[in-house]
Amino acid sequence: MLLSSEDGKITILPALPESWESGKVKGLLAVGGVEVDIAWKNKKPISISLCSSVDQSINIFYGNKKLTEKIELKKQEQQIIDLHSCEWI
Image (cartoon, one colour):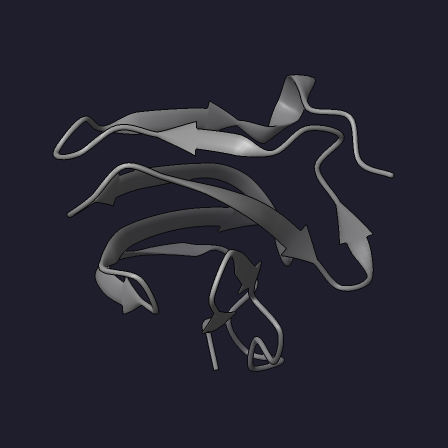
């Protein structure tokens, strides 16, 4: 499984297969009408692209770690998050 979601929360790579060391996926649809693209390397996320069908705030999780701030999404506006420089709490 590459994505899990519920209202206001997206968890990325919750059950990445062992054999998928690096890769990317495009066009996953999360709850709330959020289209998600994910790239990963060494089984860790390196970037996320988000595009929402409505204005909304979401939290992004990887395992039990959360981004430090909520992500504010505007309708039909793509947001790319570079996780190399991201702080997780």
